[in-house]
Amino acid sequence: MRKYYEAGKVSHEVPLEPIPEEVRALYLRPGEIMAIQEIFPVAYQPLGTLEWHGRHNPIGVDSIKAEQLCIKAAQLTGGVVMPAIHFAADAYWDTGFGIGHGMDATAGFQLPGSYYGIDNALLSKFLVNACQNYLNRGFKLIVMVSGHNPPIQQNLMDEVCYICKTAEGGEPVCFAMDYSLIGQGNPRRASDHAAGIETSMMLFLNPDRVKMDANKGHEREQLGLGGVMPYDEATAMEGETRFHMQVEGLVKLAKDKLRARNEAAV
Image (cartoon, one colour):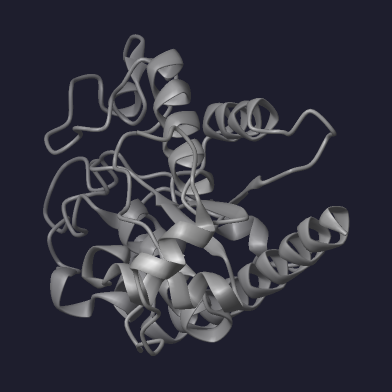
């Protein structure tokens, strides 16, 4: 069995199909994926968590944000959206309750619903392996998008991108935090944890899964929340504005990076 991708043989054995409206890899047939690769050979990789985001939000906030961004960008540019990865990097820190992992540190105990913990070295190897799988099967560019935004996540993703560089210095893998897709200097280029920004995103993307009164009446109403904008000032309109700004930035990133890859190959 060959250990490398033989595009010529594959095209002979697997006929191209018309490009569908569907962009999620889980639902695409091989002939559809190949047809997409002919036009825009980009794999979008959403990164998120299953993590406490207040009593009022679903635990998949980070993954939902990233996946919906990737889906919308792929609908506009082409490309394929891989299944979201729900493990992510986070750090231990002390906010006065004793050292804790992620938002557990602000609570002083392990919060329910946080299932995203993983050894960082293992996560790095896992993501490198995933990217190599995509590149070895016909994609030219991997765009990773994270809805989980602590600095340690940025550092780990930067490492993955560096490891995946070609011997000539080419960059087949790139990465962005969701909020960083909004242009420099824009006041909306910011994020939080389950406060006004992320809750606004959920009110736009999944309003039926947000229970805005869930925190009311509790002694620690802000349990496991962090951000400047209060969660109860969140609006779907604000979430929609931020989402479309981020989509615009992601589309530009993917097009620019693919253009650079194509130019380097000439």
